Image 1 (cartoon, rainbow, N blue to C red):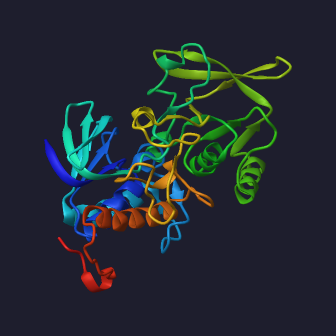
Image 2 (image 1 turned 90 degrees about the horizontal axis):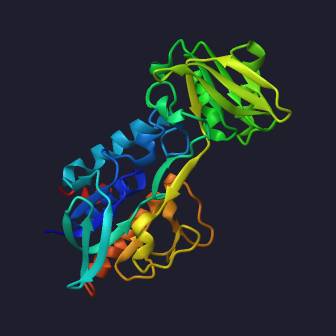
Length: 333
């Protein structure tokens, strides 16, 4: 049985920054995450995707952001429980007892839920035998652009992920065919302008309105992908790699069984403290909801700081705590 002040559930960017904030106010922290590494979606899905709205970073890759957050919490040596899911949470001795699917037991005074959208996985296109190609020539995420260098790609989807990765990978691949079942893409205007320029240069082909229809290949290696329009016309396109970007299937999992108030897959919180309907449990990041909520990493960072200070007051009721800036305190190891 481990004992701690705070258990942070979720090791994405918001969860990691809340570790720093809680540590800075003198709280001991454990972190639980289902993935084998820290970083959440930034590490698992978008390590090489640039992020533009992190203060003081005009542009930073997802992997770089996580690396910096890891450096920030290293002085405090938080305990990490990776590749584990929280299965049970029960009230015990004025705090909470947490049990993971690997049998770790942690007694904690407070809990921060920083689970983002919950457990996530790709929405697979309904193509026969697609599983036999996954991991060899069908991928649902991009870890390293260099892996795709010189190859012919088909990217399927019409949202930001499909458009952004088309723009990024066009710099290194032989050719990209972007397939979407509508003529219009849901992406930023500037991204669409860049997409049009790439099409005019011949670097990419926009195939609309078409949808994926079938895969051809052997031993997991694609040779072509069939695409069909709404009149039944089928095109067979030679390709090396298929990247379907149809969004994520998400699930809050056991969190919904903890007795918390849940509203449309989010957890309502007090915006001044990020406290949930259960005293001692806080929700931060995309999983938290309140009027005016913006699902931005920088807002999640602020919520992590508010939760940390509120948690300290919850753990030490009546104790006067003088707020100090980090420029005054430095990093308390």
